[in-house]
Picture 1 (cartoon, rainbow, N blue to C red):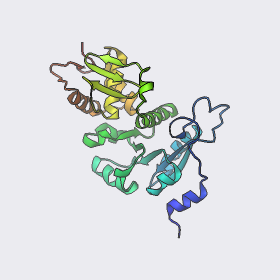
Picture 2: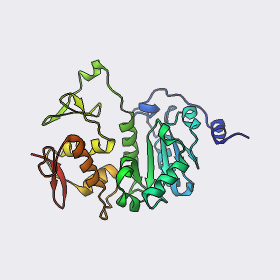
Picture 3: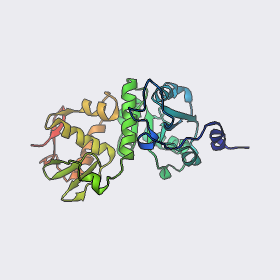
Picture 4: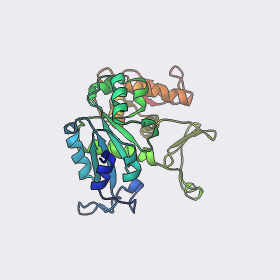
Length: 272
């Protein structure tokens, strides 16, 4: 009796990573006349209740993703099908403990994953998220629009798949400097005195958003919308927890800020 992986492999034609951009994702030039190229991005949607994510599967398909829907992930599927993204439906979870239990059920051997994994969660859970849960790539579902959904998915893929440039390429890449920090936007690396400061993708996104404002205030609503694709705060400390972690890694202090200043009751901005 073939297992789930063998059944899926049998009915989905294999496609290599020809052309396109990272993971075989089509470039804008390839996506002409609303037609998908031969080499497309392959995603796995994992849900105990596929009806909850039917709309998202449609959105991905419209954007040239091959989507496999299954009730539990099987590790051999990744290498066999060139899966470039895994989305796990955890919208039924009400707290971090339940999230952890259901994630381990949906995705066994999660620690061995070598592709970006996004977790679909409810707005309520997002508003109360804290601790290690905030280090995961979370996306509120249902989302506000197709556009914000695809923006967050493409951002997660881009952040995960960026690879270091060669020495020849790096010569032509400009670096942004803020005080004694050097930010390489192409490599997504932050350094101080030639020492790399290891940031999570969310911490890096927070820092670059603040840099983009060039000293202007980023409200908590702005940050929630840009990074977590939601404008629902509801007393959440999601932004504050990540800013605190970012400050710690930068060696910054809220009381005497060198890099990030708190604008009380509003949000954050770059320090003068």
